[in-house]
Image 1 (cartoon, rainbow, N blue to C red):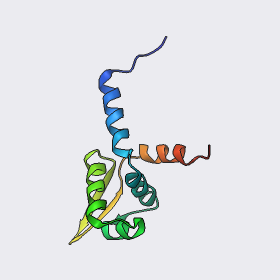
Image 2 (image 1 turned 45 degrees about the horizontal axis):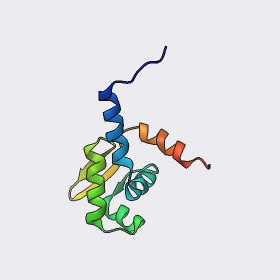
Image 3 (image 1 turned 90 degrees about the vertical axis):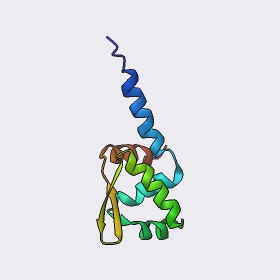
Image 4 (image 1 turned 180 degrees about the vertical axis):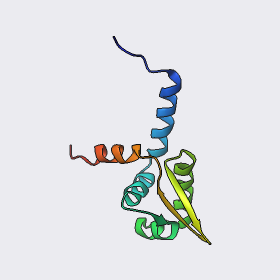
Length: 95
């Protein structure tokens, strides 16, 4: 018997994947998989402005994909949703 996925669940999946569906956000994920990073480091590693990196991190944070920890004026980000690791593994496989 085929199980039909609820509309609610499909909508949640689509929103989650939409948050990942940008090259800069995928690059951020690829760096954060290696460990926590502050916005300044991410900006330098990705050769992208800090405001741009912060904007993309905000989208990922709002969807619960990344989390952050503040230490004074420095904010470090990390992978919060473990599903991202599995998705990244799948995407990293050579076709």
